[in-house]
Image (cartoon, rainbow, N blue to C red; front, side, top):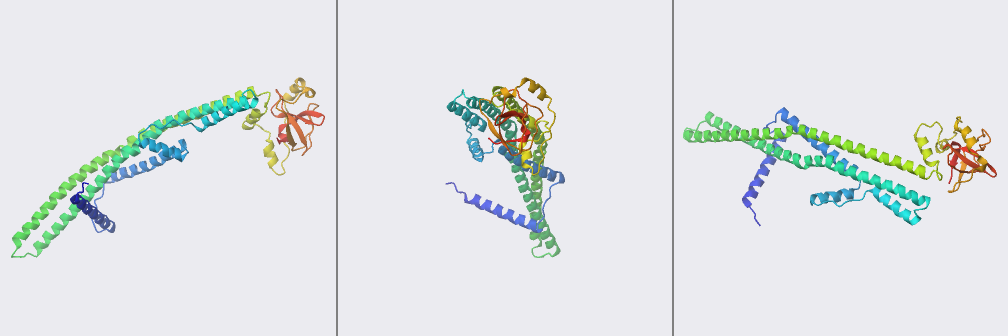
Length: 394
């Protein structure tokens, strides 16, 4: 084991000297060389950039990978300089489970075929998410990481060197000041027996201190210039990060646009494929998300003392009455559902069914019917009933 005692003693001495200097500066007992205002502003700006870049970087990592265990795994793979194995996204895993379940339930059944369709779109969403994560990691996270682990480390190293040069300069200033005071004191009270040799020694000591001060001042000025140039590069860093931020936003917008398109295509496919089974399901969602004046059954039922929804004229009623014969309507293949009547309702014509509040009726849908209406049955009576007057129970 190579153990250098002299170097260890020297480092310990420097550390102790620095500690004494810092303590005296804090107590106001030692002179401290101040940096110029421009350099101080650059240092403050650099510290601010580093702190916020680190926060943005960490939070972006959380956004892209919420699982802390996965983030730790990625960190170790990165430090070991090994390629991270491909990881299945949650949407892709959900899609795979849906398609596997469809094989068990039977792909020919309505439920099985729908699971296959939804599972395929979930896998597409997962693929879009994977592409977004890769693009964001390359275009946004990597530049931020390069700044924190590369440029900032260089800046920090040069700033530490500048601080050491400042401390050395202050030591030389204090040494010269001490030598000047000793020389002045000797000149004020001369010793006639040793005047010539002592004055000579004191003058030589002051000259040596002045030389050391000039060297220290030169080293300090050179290091201050190097540090200033590096800190002024923070402006270029901001420009680079701005470009990366634009690329991140573009990737995010493309990802959400792609997801929106997939979900719209899925809704259309399910509506067309299951129109004879659940024609009202997606239409109700569309009407509630769009401009609809009628309150939903859930919202009116949960409000105490809520009044029944106003009856707006339905221009399609007349057409439906002529083309749809209620007495010939049969329940769909998926069966019927029970519904609780929320408010009294008086039938407007013979195709509708009058309702009494709190009674239970059987309802179902038929192809081609207005999404705001269902077919209701009560005993031998049958007719159209408004959805907003019902609370579907099963």
